[in-house]
Image (cartoon, rainbow, N blue to C red; front, side):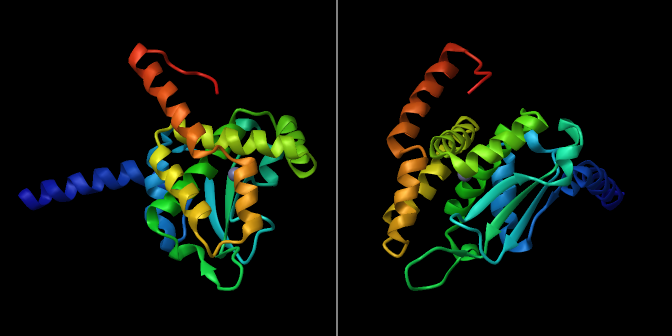
Length: 212
Ligand SMILES: [Zn+2]
């Protein structure tokens, strides 16, 4: 009897979680980090996202983008892919992304989910324009990267985001040019702390932040 109840309970749980899990395709080696990051973004539980390893990505370690075909569909049927480079750019040794410390990787994925939060409110045309500007305008890259960081911090991932930044900026093996890029385009630890202070004040005052 007890066994049957337990079995039934597990079956119901499986039924509840199956459709949610089906939206996200995650390679086994990073499943734990992705799942942790996703818990901070309940808004994305029904958004199709594929996490995919790639040999090399130009100038970055991870890249979130809408799938090409979904730009022809309506905004709510859009799906996304997060490309993850198999290696992190370093001067002489090979550094496998899957070997990055777990909280650092979680923060990295949180930042990418921040990009998707940013994309999902945009129209298809706006997104195409957004992609175009990202390729050609430095100031636009700064805005886009800061928006992603901001979404992740607002979602409650500041500890992870700070760990990711700390890892990149204080890791002597990582390429100096890559570090410079991080400093130029992303929120600094000080800015994240400032955001957090603002967030905790708003939470205390009962203000619900709608836009970023
Ligand atoms: Zn980014």
